[in-house]
Length: 338
Image (cartoon, rainbow, N blue to C red):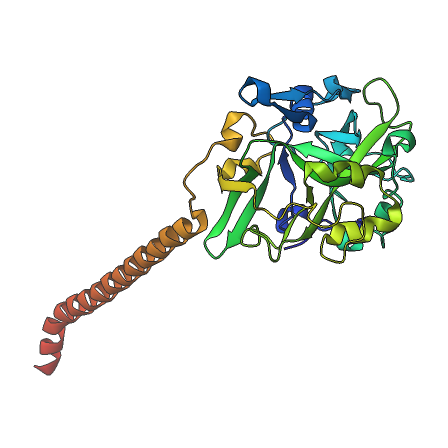
């Protein structure tokens, strides 16, 4: 498997690589966001009735969000840039220093994922690890999604799976954001393009290790504020999320998969134009490649039998022709003897 490359020099043909977290369910509304971050409080005087202290969140350009269930790079995602503010950004980071002409079909596929282990080592991402992305238009952010799709590849073929939370809440995925401004781009009334890249991590030791060797860096909602506002120097330890973690709040801020669920979905998910409720409908996993292999095997057997039968027919015909010729030549041979 191959994690998404972070520079154009490492770009490969997308049709021949397995990419981590390249499709997400981006159907998220402002109500969903407010519900996620609203605090629950219990009123014991009324039989412990649960109420919620609604979190006031502003979505600057909610109308620009396409709400796609099968969201691929270059499409829009809901991006939290501050505790109380969401922006609509495009999936697939494009650096602000980009000089070549904008190409939507190409540029967003260069870096829609970035490895959390090396985020501070690569210029494209390192410059986007500062806090306060809302004020700078560049920095750490959290992409809010309902779930993501991953393809399980083995000898039997490839089967897509849909991964989401058991309780139905949104997933909070660590991301970095940048703003590209150019005369060649026009989006929502201005020459500005805000883009994001999702952080991934090694899935070893998590419940998702069977599905892929990488997984998104998913935050527990209590850690969202820390990711958005903490000092850049603490980022490395924050992403390790182990007993040596030095960030505020200690370890245990990154989801390991305990609260996740997954099930197989239709192989049609591979088509970008495939949308709607069918994207998240559970299906019976089908080993398509294996089925094709069986058909191919039988086809080869039939072809071999047909070839052998045809060969035998040719041999029989040859013998019959030889016998016929010998029979016709027999009277002539008798006359010669006389």
